[in-house]
Image (cartoon, rainbow, N blue to C red; front, side, top):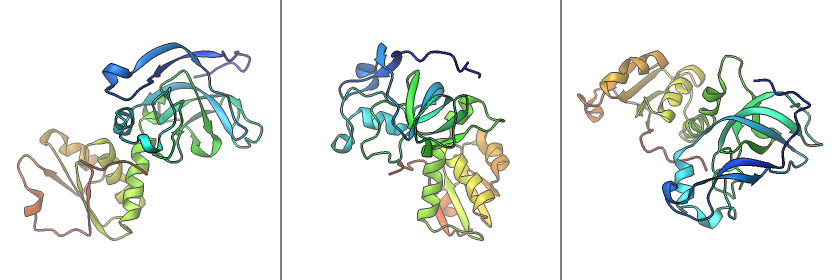
Length: 240
């Protein structure tokens, strides 16, 4: 997606906004007159092409993290992919026209940004963004940041390393698919086993699972194999 450098940046934008805690169906509204966020010295302004919503967005909207949340009104959304349209004075690596993606919050639960990615524009620190791979669409890129961070951080917390074995519960989900690939192709796992329903077994194998387990027919607790790590991606929580 190309955006001409001469395209003016509006002062107002469309954004999904909530001003109180509650279920999305009750509190989330489309605001056609939201203010475009100002760019700080170390930030870039992104014209959002794609964004994804995660369980943490719903939990935040319900007020589960209100003690460390930012003030209302809130535009939800952590994951973003888009085009840089403005850069702050201290930005060195990125430039106008770059296609980027990333998680807009350095810390998920410590006063996350009021202006998230479910808007036409969002302001993000340069350090939190990467150039979008050419072989990924904007939608594909926007689906990745938070789940990859969750998967990678979980593996690091377990002390996972080359030569170890792992069993991934919920291997076909957003986090589970990333754990399989990271464990096998990045960390160098000796054996990766994962559970899913019958229809997703081939997906597990294509991602690198050595053993694909149909949880509708087998109980993973009865497996003869032993694993160094068991990663529960069915209830993997969220990145802190």
